[in-house]
Each structure stands twice: as structure tokens, then as C-alpha cells.
Length: 331
Image (cartoon, rainbow, N blue to C red):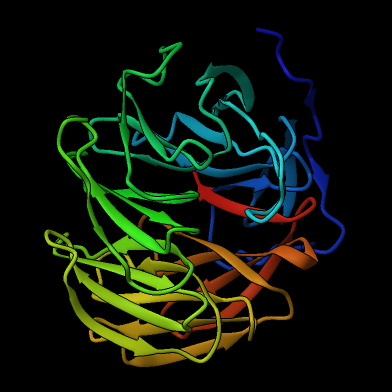
């Protein structure tokens, strides 16, 4: 495997973040730059760009293992879900301590790799949007090929979330307008499929793993489904376009990124709106500080990550990034 070129920018300050948004927040924020075709490392407290590593064209989703040692980034290979193209067939494996691309996992012929998840056993689950297949990689730190694959029952499958032990996975289908519950370990087990609404892009499990929350973008609704049966529990109209849905760790609350109104909104477990904050840019992805009430919100069109205080629900500052920051993780 030919190693991608590594760009060393240690101790280079970003132009706009300056003192950083970090006001009491410390750590290194790993940022996938979708149109920067790279992954970058930023010192949160100092607002400093530490390093940037080139990847293939248009990387999208990322997960980090429990030890915060390795990051796995899917090579989607096209900018947007509506773009045509074969896309990528590999997962990039990044050593977070060395800040280095150490290898790739070739999953061809499965392509347009987008949704990606990692369970408590450190098994990797990677979704091929083109083939509508969920791939399982049991030892992603060393594996050169997938361990198993299951059909999802959807079309243009985009995002995936698993329960903690990795026994169940939930997959959204953009074109089939479905969400599927699949067993990643048994391809003979037929998927359970529901239609939560039009253009369901993302989903998230409640902390007790009993409820699956889905954002139906074209219907402008949040939907709560029984995680076992996928039967509808509750449905709520929302003001704009719920691109992504997240469950706040340790809380019975949801966050959505609304790309129409440029807001992040908090809802309770009954889907009642509680708070909302508006940004200058389009909010896309959210990640959470592992121990503090802090979230990191990527703002796609202004190449910025905003730091959101989850207690005051106010932005405390920003970090400048490369082109189109999509997904982040704090290490």
C-alpha cells in the first residue's frame, strides 16, 4: 500500500481561531475535511492547526476506537449523496497518536462507503450506499478484508448506527425512504423494515437502546420508533430540515442539525423543542466531549467548527478548518 502524503503543519496557528474557542476545553479535535480531502488535527484550547493528512477524494464519516488510538474514515468518493459516481471502496486507518495514515482496508467491490459505526467489541460496521450492504470487520486494526456482509433491504443506504454490543444495526435508505434493523452476524435473518417518512438520512439510539430516533428530512419531522419492532411511537413536526439526529450522551435529549434554518435544536425524549441556537454557517455534524457538557458542531460552508456549551446552549467560540468540515472527534 502506498502511503498518502502527510502534510506536517505542527505549531501552525489558524488564521481565525486565534486563542481558540476552547475556553476551558482541552484536547485535540480530529476533523474530516470533506472537500479538503483530508483529516486534520486541531488543538482546541490554543486554536492551533497541528497537522493535516491527505486522504482520497471526499472522505465523509469517521469513528474512533474506544482506546482513542485509531480512527476509521470511510472513503465515500463523491461530495454529496445526489452526485453520480462510483465512489470509494476503502476505509482509511489513521493512527491518532502518530497523526499518520497507516493503511487502508480495501472493501471492493463494495463502494460509496458512507455510514460507519464501531461497537463495544471494536468491530467495525461499514455501509456501502451503492450495494445496500452492511459490512462487518471484526479486527479492523489488522484486517485486510471484511469478515461478513448482510443485505440491508434499503436502497441508497446512507447512515448506520449499532447498539453497544453490535448485535443489531440500523440503516437508513435515502431512496427507499426506509429504516432497516439488521443482524450484522446473520445474513439469513431478514431485515425488519419501516418507512418513517421521506428522506430519512440519520438515526440515533436512545441511551437505553429502546427507542430509535429518525429525522425525515423531506417531511420536516422527527420520528421515534420502537428499536425492536420499528413500530412508530411518536412523530413531531420540526421547523426546518433535520439533517442529522443525535442523542446527547447520558441524557434523554436529542440534538438536530437543521441546514435550512442554520440551527442546532434540542428536544426532549417526547420530541418537544427545548432550546435552539443559530449559526452563521450550515451545521452538519456534531460530536461530544467524552466528559464535559460540550459539543463540536461543523459548519460546512464557512470551514469552521463551533464549540457549543450544552448547559447554556451558547457557542463559546470557533476553530478554523479546511474545506467543508464534516465529522469530528475529540481525543
